[in-house]
Image (tube, rainbow, N blue to C red; front, side):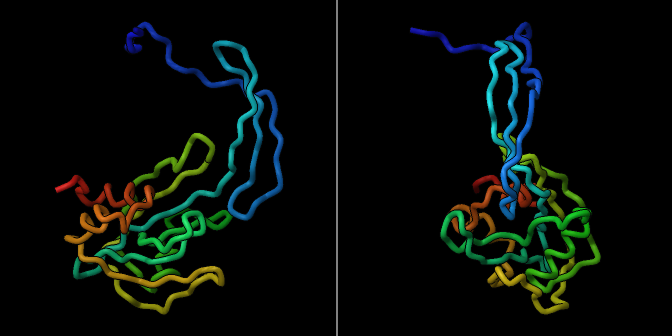
Amino acid sequence: MSTPHTPSSSSPRPRAWEKLDTRHSAHMILFRPRWDRLRHPRSGEEFERLVLETPDWVNVVALTTDKKLVCVHQYRFGTSSVTLEIPGGVLDKGEHHAEAAKRELQEETGYTSARWTYLGAVEPNPAFHDNLCHHWLAEDCKLTHAQGLDPGEDIEIEAVDLADVHLRIARGEMRHSLVISALSRVLDLRPR
């Protein structure tokens, strides 16, 4: 019977792999595939690994003046289902994530805010994505505009009571990992 590996201070940490070369595949709207040939730092063995070069994303935790969470229902192609999420999207080329957060909130929901707080960024999936998802908090949001949806979007808005967010997550109505990551920076999401 084997014993589990126990980390010790004498075990060296993983090191960066030497990149030997890179080739790109055709751009695929949301990302561009890149194949990197790398050398394993310990064994010297070469591997080819896929990286999806992806623009940064942004998510907005938008709270209304009466403390409701502005959410969007939209169809997601990956899961073939309508999801409940917070507003967000892809940064336009050269756009700062702060501006993208304001733009996405207004376009998707018609809400705007004068009170913005940056909540930090996460790596959506560093195994094969090279981008960040920036989380923003917008407080005292007010409905000031009509939606300005892209031709490929079909979004319904719902203002969710903050007390119901836990329940919506527990029931599996809200389970997008980046949405929950952003919400966890504002709300205590531990099971009650």
